[in-house]
Image (cartoon, rainbow, N blue to C red):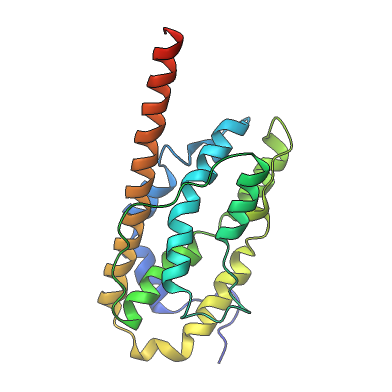
Length: 203
């Protein structure tokens, strides 16, 4: 049975409530700050995409067996294509993945991964209006937003009675922390590179 559009189960609401602080920390991380700046520069946009690629790819590989590919296509390849157009290197993730030892934990991880696509259309629109040059944005413009999010919960509906809320919540928190730890590493790397460049230039 499908849920009416815009209606989500208690598990979704409880996961959102339990991970609010993690979500806020991720959204406001310095690696993503440039996505909604005005104007958006190519440098800041590339920095954000580079940071998103590693954990997105790692999680999609780890969790790909749970969702049917014909309905939930992997999206890290879209980031890779955008970065290729920007002539930027792919930065794999070196942070250890959370452990997803149960179906409930897998759902917790997917809650973060699938939820990360929700703002794609907003960012794509912002890019269109506020970027100084035309920037590749397959990853954001093809996100499907709430359509995919609704499809995700519709797919989970018959499985919800068998899931453990606590296990799903802990996995979601661990997945948010995984993203944040990777972003922290990216920020540290960027600061090191900037310091090296300034030293080379005598600044």
